[in-house]
Image (cartoon, rainbow, N blue to C red; front, side):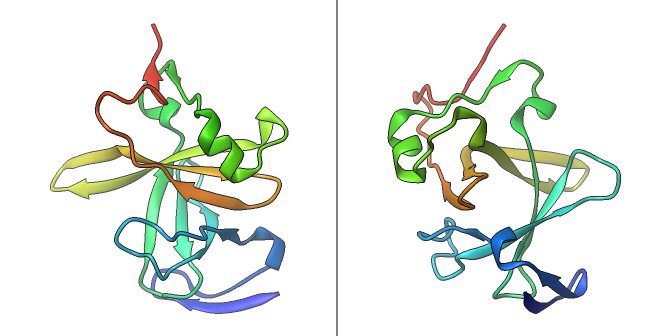
Length: 136
């Protein structure tokens, strides 16, 4: 069990196997590697809370709840990096941020997580990249 403080949720405890390891960190936060997911009330949203920094937490969501029919097909390179053996193990989130009254989803830097191994990576997509695409 890992016990840590957060500025939003107070002191939390998490089983070691619940911690998601982003071995490369996230964009702009290369030194933060360990995160947990926390349910956000009774919504499909979640908090991605850094274990090692009490002030870092992001609201995340599955891309398909933001854009209906959005495909979250992840390319083979990412699947290999995450050591995906079962397609059902891959979970994709986008980070949300609030700007004034707007909620903005970061589709250019989605998070891919191996639900079995708890290994994660932030994917940086170029505008022409087809790893994620809207389906009709």
